[in-house]
Image (cartoon, rainbow, N blue to C red):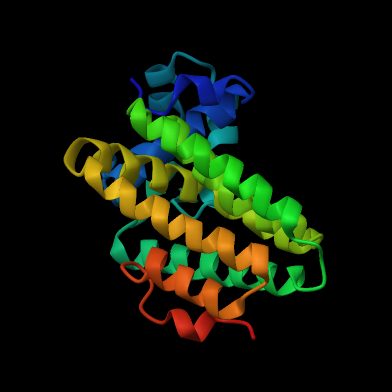
Length: 226
């Protein structure tokens, strides 16, 4: 049984990472409910693997704070609106800090990379490809993180990435089915990000944060690094 994690994303994953990716998506989507008990034997049978990669998967999911490991197995932890808001809070802090590191750099190359990813996002919408849109959306925002040349910032970003990527994928799948016209607004909002980076404009980036995250972040101004 799988929960809809894209097969193309699994190509470079180990068996344990692949199992973790499926379970992670199931938990975030609510298919695997909070307080559900998972055992190594049960999951090994479900994915037709030995218990060893299941143990690896459980360790990854515990790092994501999606399960709590016990002697008899793993208990699924809550992942609701509060957890989602906290996740976006952390993302806002990381992106804000990354931008503060770019002010002394030539940002034209960074803006060019973001424009490229935005064009690919537009193509993904045309083909109703939520998986491709999600990948390029993440690479759009990741351009700032990678350009910051801050090793610990990148480490935190990569730690956040698996859960955030699953959350965005599920959101984009729903949006493409229920509200495809909303992608025009998303594209416009991402253009504001590009303008902010291209011009090293703090006010413009603050505007971009509000446009993109007001629905999930209730105190965006509190995360802004001047």
